[in-house]
Image (cartoon, rainbow, N blue to C red; front, side, top):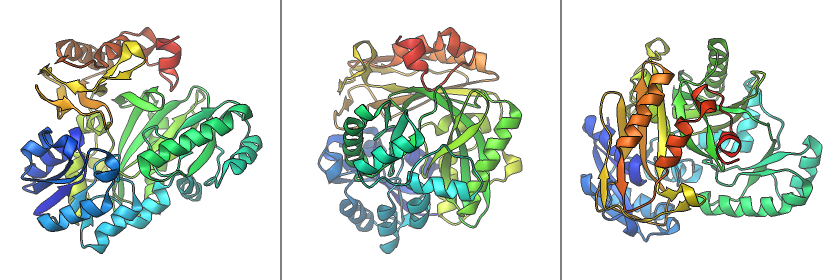
Length: 445
């Protein structure tokens, strides 16, 4: 196992990694921007090092500064978390060039499967069904041509990343130029790469994903499924495990994810994302080559620590469990609490948290870097906490989450907690009738 790692991220995921590493007796260096000097991961780190100004382009996306921070502090490996450079093949390659282990897939794997257009070709080669779509689109003219070929509506996606950034649904040719340019700029700002690709847009699918782990030698284990259909503007807001699929379909989708990961000798944690239509047909959408924001729901139903597993695989110790070790017990729901005002079109609500009280009790977990007096900076994603509820069944998990959210107190900023309570109380949600248009159709219409 490593003696010291650099955490190249911020917020709740930096704290999550730090805690897992501590349990394995691994010291942590937290890289931080000037805006995050007083963040909880920095305060709890064994060492902390400033890597630049508040804008992520000068800090969390600054490859040179991150590498220098790792080298000068004597770190042996770099954990990129999620977002920022987590799926950047060049960063992974630079880490290797400087004798730093990148805690994630090999650079060539990220290049091949992390690029969303290339991933579709890999899926086809592995016999995994995909929606009709394009390779990378060199320009707007190519996008126009391909949209006519597969038919509107279509969806534009950023080749270099996920999280809903650089993603647009286009209903007609009249809207294509505006959405293409806007999506490119959003992708450039989020991932440093404006490249786009296109897929046919499926109406009312479920968004289901499979968590996989590979040892880099061709051995892959899956940890079953999550449902991530509750989304707003392609950003996930609430996730649960397992998804509302029948067991036969669940096993079929999981087997396809393992087959895909085995075909590229995947190393570390990865997530294969699928769209499932009303007829039960599933289509591979993309593979995220990192830990996911929603990984805690999988941990709660399997009782496996995914960050521990990431560290073990990266250190060459293997996955640490076999497929027969993976069992699902109960149901887990995660809500993403963000500093946004749901009553005013989810307007960002940066500012100082004057008081905070987190919920507790059996089956409740809170992942957060926020404390009383913490100032939420306006420069980054607005996620301030993930509240996770586990119970023996879905009905119990919903009831437990409602109780936990009503216990939660966050003063000084607006949050999405009231909105989440409305989702949980929605009759369609309660009976599992959730699709990717759930919020637009059932909550905002």
